[in-house]
Length: 414
Image (cartoon, rainbow, N blue to C red; front, side, top):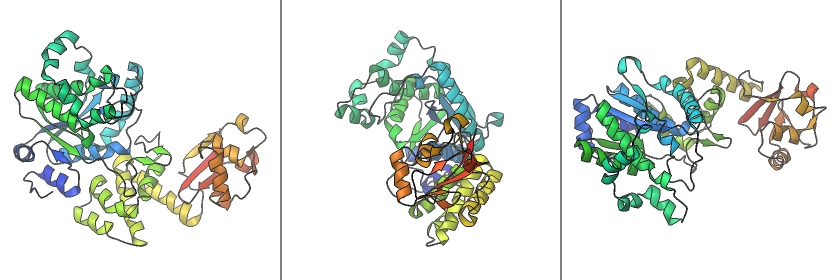
């Protein structure tokens, strides 16, 4: 990116690697320079927690506020009832209102860690406020007439699904119209002039801009971030155990810290820029370290990201636990605890049964493979026999299970 931004926010976006595309970079830059500007990012309530895949855009909102502007976090209480079809191979399961509200309650916990909602500095809104009460015929007449089906079919997010001859329901097809209407309503009600999101949302953002200009004749903009993959090609936010959740009750601060500590060497500098507030020069210096020194940079990354989400005390505790586990071979008080019922344990289970019943390994086949390769330890002792029986006496107050060098759990009876 060779553009030299005048506004502080766009300078940060470009320098730290957040910017993928913008509808009119120069016009947005001027507006931000004259500021303050209001911007939003939408979050559909499809799960009880946000995950690491959302974190990049949350950091964008944080920088937006830190540079003097007003962010809106828009909860998709209305749009979740439809489901975003973008780049999906099949329709999302439909959730009822109680499930959607429960998910919203879980997701909202995270935002207060990153944004200041006091005195209107940021706003938390729900698009059900205007979508739930729409009159269908009026909506078709007043809003639907501005959309070309030909153009909607040309967007890559929809086209890719149709090209594979996978069904796209009329319900899902309406999603992009509803998201466009969100931008119109946010502009009308809150003078919101910018929508941000991942680059997979480009088509939806363009629709909102076109609709708002047609109906209100207001100048508004869209800005997207890159869809991140790790250097080894995995989608950002996914680990071997599944999604890396941001809610502490769904993923412990220790496990969250470990996710960042296990960052691939090639990703350290880039992730420091995107997920921490360390100066760019320091991020680049740390990212260039090699050998054993890069491990120190990974600890800096893990501590900084964990501090933002869970607090400095949780980050320090996670680092101390990791040091105890890896360097001293201790059990570590903050390891994720997995419970097994006394009835399920009975008079004892084979180690393979224990691992599968507690979910530590996804299958008995995987447990046997780990044992055959010497990758399983109980209280730091390598297990060699898959028929090893584990009873209540063996578990005692807690049995530490180590899968490879990086995954550790504490099994307790409960």
